[in-house]
Every structure is written in C-alpha cells, then in structure tokens.
Length: 271
Image (tube, rainbow, N blue to C red):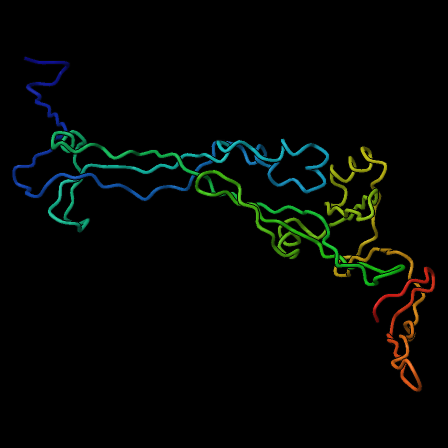
C-alpha cells in the first residue's frame, strides 16, 4: 500500500522507562541544602524597629516593635528519589518519585518556616558624665550612644548597646544633635541631619533646639549645682567642766574640736 508516495515506511517510537532488576541497592530520598530564609515582610515594614529614640518619642512606643510574625519567612530545598548502593553520588541513580513512595519512604518537606536574619542599628541619646563640679557651674562631657537590633530564633528583638562607631559605619556620619532641656537633666537626641525626625522634632516640640556638634569632638553641655559656700576650718572649744577640787588648787577641762564652718549659715560640720 502506498501512503502519500511513501511505500511500506515503518516508523519508530520510544518512551522513557526505569528498570531496577539489574541495579541492586535501595531507594532513598536525598535533599539539597536549605536556601536562605526569604522574609515574608518587606524590610520597610520592619523599619520601625530601627527608629531612633527621638522618633520613638514622636510616634509613640507602640509603633516601634513590629509583630513577631514580621520576621517569619520561608526557606526551600529540593528532594529527589535515588537508587544507590552507598553514599557515593556516583553510585546513585535518580529514580521516579513513586519508587521511593512504594518503598514506604515519605518525601521530605521542601519548604519550611524560618526566622529571617535581621540586623539594624539605631541612634539613641547622648550619655553624659557627672558634672565636673560639686557646686556652682561646671561641664558634662557626652558620648554618642548606638544600639544594635537583632532578631532571635523565636522572633524576639534583641537590643544591644554598641559603640558609636557601629552607627557611624552603618548609618553614616551625617549626624545632628537636638537638645531638650525642659528638665534639670536635659536629653540630647542623636538623629540623621535633614531626616524626618529632625524636622518633626522642631515642629512638634518648642523645647527642642539644635546643639552644636562636630564629628570626632566631645559633646559638652553646661551644668550647675547649688552655689558654692564659703567655708573655714576653726577650733571650737566646749564648756569648761567644774573644778576638780572643792578646796584649793584643781583642774578644769574642756573639749576642743576642729570643725568646718559654713559662713553662709553659721553651722558647724566635721572637718
């Protein structure tokens, strides 16, 4: 019979098959390494965790800690069924998944929830030394303070105080200081120059003003204590005792103490 001019043409057809009778060994699942954790939430949604102390004050503490689920992500891997006689990859042949399933082997999971790696840095406030004087006017020297925020395996933020160099490295050196001196112990906030919190700090609080600062130089603010009192050291005698004799010569005694006297009050204290 002739078909379209082709006389007695015989074609071929092939399908993939998998034969195990001559293989030996056993079926098993092997898996690839887990991928990095892919975060479900955009980094910007977690940014409140990295707000500076001033921004936390402006927007409220409740907005600074994202929900623990914000740090949850997914990691993945691949699982494949192989037939092999050992752990050597050269002795393993990939097999259709149903062979492992027929052998009673459940396929390993290829996705798993995880906690995404998250680290950020945030400026806090300037930490000051004690006043340089115990009375009258003096100075306090301040140190810029920085915090590192990480996320634990259970999704809890862990906050650690670190050196100012960490914030300068990660956040940049474009730093401004804002002082709120409503109280006797003023608060000095550290912010990025030209940032939102710097502008809103001025707008929302009339008590906040800029504090002069040059990178690499100490932060110095004035401090005051009660006025210094004029003091002197004096011998202060006590009352004479009665004469030791009732007839003739005897002795009288009295105590003499070295005391410090406050000239303004006239009060004596121990020297």
